[in-house]
Image (cartoon, rainbow, N blue to C red):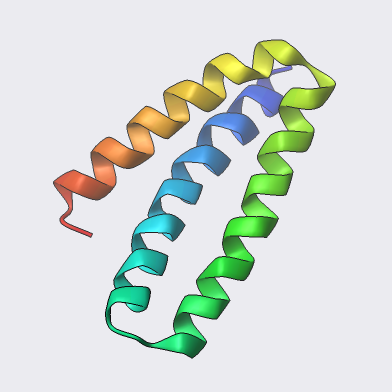
Length: 78
């Protein structure tokens, strides 16, 4: 249970960082790097989704991870 909570939290936080890098490279029209980050978005999103589909309570750490990841990415000016 603890492992699932940590996976949901950190995978969602990481997903927010990946989105930040993806957006940066789309804006710079760097297609190869944007494509790489798009692939990471799909992989990370699949991991998070599979985790909370198996247990709906995992939505809670996923939401907290989304907030924390976005907050940290903004604070670090990514």
